[in-house]
Amino acid sequence: MEFDFLNNKLTINEAKQLNPLVLAFIGDSAYEVFIRTYLVNNNRDMSAHRLHLNTISFVKAHCQSEFMKGIENILNEEELSIYRRGRNAKSGTVPKNADVQEYRVATGFEALIGFLYLTNQLGRINELLNIIINLGI
Image (cartoon, rainbow, N blue to C red; front, side, top):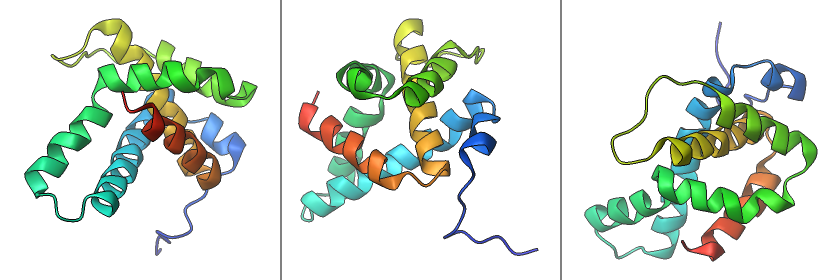
């Protein structure tokens, strides 16, 4: 069986049935690709090392937690539900550079991005990421 990488949409119900940590798993990767793409497109002469450092400033748990505070009030009920499921999921690990509360909020943020990505709601991701970029935490 061949997998279609360009057409990988799940239904909303299928995505809702996934473990929120699975949504966060894919959301973490998708978010980082979106941020890296944004940085490359806007800093074409920047070194790879500098691009990496700038990426970290957007993807670390502390920043994701701050970004979530900046977008939480514009999320619809479905998005808030996905975020809360991710935030409340028990992952069993905490990274060394984040406190537990920030890490949990960041996990909720990543679950939201993963849900939107897997359900092919790219316009909504674009809208939220543009707000995040403008927050510039």
